[in-house]
Length: 390
Figure 1: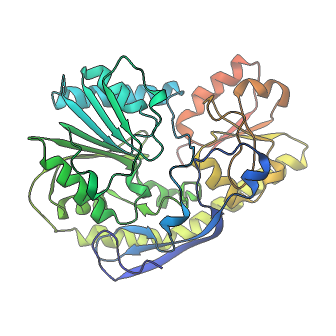
Figure 2 (figure 1 turned 60 degrees about the vertical axis):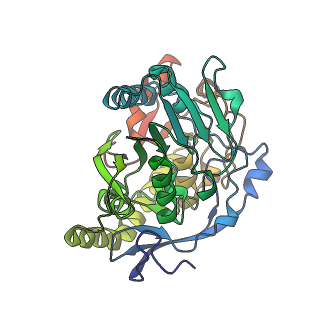
């Protein structure tokens, strides 16, 4: 068990939410239904730090999660997500004059974002990720993908912009990790660091149990994220919410150490954590009732969005046999199976045969996009999306 806070080393942590026997990875692709059903499981217990507001899975065991396994994290097949990315790329390139410079991405995945920003800036790119796949990056760009973990041995890698998107939530020793990023940033004059990660304030407020995963061992609010970076020697240039307030976007530069923190905001986070368990239980019950009632009326139910949210949602719902399939627009996912529930991931076009009566949308921001895709297929099922903003 992890007893001290991984962000501030404090010992005043309070457990507030537990889930047992959940899949240890939510992005890994499995080739068979049996392999997906037998996928490894672990226990999760979230605890909040009373000193800095950081939230961690204190039962997390990093050796359980193998990031070298094939996984598919890309959302770039969604027009809505692509529009968000293009807007973000334009901002970063213009705000920090990145034309012709070097961009370094930690946790680059398949390199889709790195490719996008390097193309926009005519820049050189370097990415590091234990599951990097150079074959997914266009060969007309000067991009190098390194199939390794980023740690203290690779702080020689640097750039005018250091990017880290949806990786920090997978890191348990977050303090050490950010110190390594600071060291990389110091190697390039005027380097800027950009982080993108889930916003936990929304998760707490919505009782969003579908956004709790084993491999997400670290959860941040603006308060705890700002503290972590300032306490490790970063100056915060900008910290905001984006993508319908689902993400935190942080821009920072090397500065001096500042370990001050707003105690009132930390108390607010602790209060939200204490209320989360009851809110999550209400949401689980509500979705179980919806699925049960639909099946009782002999209706076909599918989920749309075969990513982490689907794994979290189905694991907690415990209604595997009542869900016909998981739909995803990403062709690299189709034909594979979700870890844990073992649902086959199918294409939108396959719904012409399934003819669903209820489509549960895993992310409300895509509801309009999904509705149009269904209408193009001549299908008009009921759409219900996760989250308060649905």
